[in-house]
Length: 209
Image 1 (cartoon, rainbow, N blue to C red):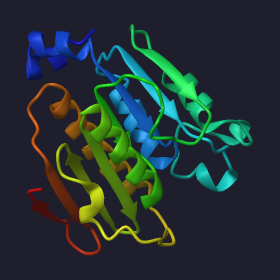
Image 2 (image 1 turned 60 degrees about the vertical axis):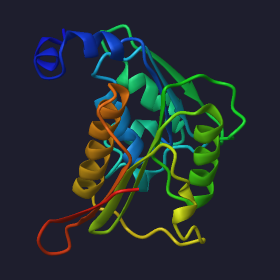
Image 3 (image 1 turned 90 degrees about the horizontal axis):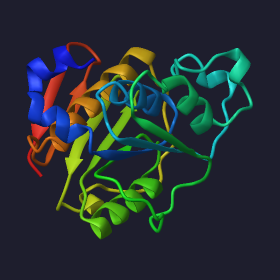
Image 4 (image 1 turned 90 degrees about the vertical axis):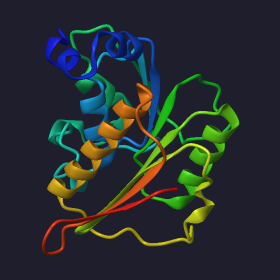
């Protein structure tokens, strides 16, 4: 099934992925992209966590959802949509994320829209000595980063009001997040932060953490 992927990462790395488990916090726009793409790579287990339900205004950028899903749990519906013909186990949790959650994973994906939850993700990751992938997108800009030892406190984590989002920009940031996740899981990714600006021409800035 993964022949073309093995051509890129090798058989040993594919076997490594088959033993890995990840947690995706947030099942909205970014969560839809990350969960869909990461479910295709042959992982052992994927946890999805989100307390929210699907609303009509979500559908334009949360492409796994449709009109018939309105009012249903985001995590449960997303888990049903990404189940594929492979051995990856998908577990949906309909609750808010808590840094004291008792699960064992090798990587956490941030697909949230607020600093408060990201701080909790950072605490969970540091406590369990695992990396996590930070991702955010607003209007024409996005940020994606890999955190290992560096504290998330480097950001000015003040309360902000979320701005609008374009589906292609959400897809772009979500896909970069997934790619960084794959490289992290096979041990080929160091800490990094990317700033992507698509207001006029595409500009990408890279910062070492």
